[in-house]
Image 1 (cartoon, rainbow, N blue to C red):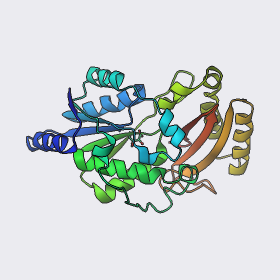
Image 2: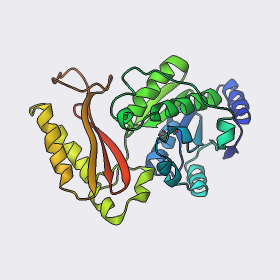
Image 3: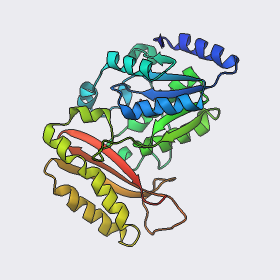
Image 4: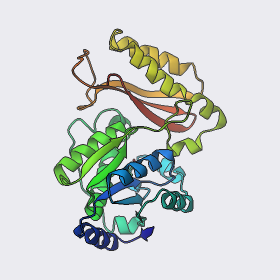
Length: 281
Ligand code: PAF
């Protein structure tokens, strides 16, 4: 497995590979890899000749400096897992390699980045868009893979790619969960024992909400979910929204012809977790 630290070296190599007709699948990550990331690498390997992965904890997408500081970092283990997963090349840039100068780009995603995560994590999606745009520029992949756990991020990256990288197909891959329903996240490593025990309630709450839709009024479903989350002392609900999958706007009246997703963010102890569930398929 090749390891690149410099943008221009990776770009030159990727361009050379593409000129021989090979296709490239790209999996951007912030490291602290788990089975969810590895499922993206595996899917990228099935669809493409080469797989490139990036590991970069992107400081400009953290609205909370403590969250950035505490973000788990396991570089040696990550490289070993990627090698075992058959990844062709890894990009591990430093902060100054990624951002040699001040970062000033501002994206406009309309309402997509204003709701849900956007309301609670100011600047987060602009930071994600900047790094993803830069990475897609450097790698120039045929396809890039993102987990559906970050459902809002996936919609925003699709909007970004439609505009800036029409040659790259953005592929959303299913969330990978523990047996008890807790969605895999690098942040799970920071859960206390009790918070870890209670965290699967988040997924159960989503399932209950899905089962109540569409015969129970949306307002009532939201109240029931909040009450259910409150029964776990370690959990604190930040938001729960039932939205149209394409626009991320709140569903006011059910429409069976449109895809609906329930999206949740909650603290389990000190750790902020998100998850979502399709309400109709
Ligand atoms: O989903 C993530 O891990 C990050 O937001 C991403 C897409 C790698 C950008 O830093």
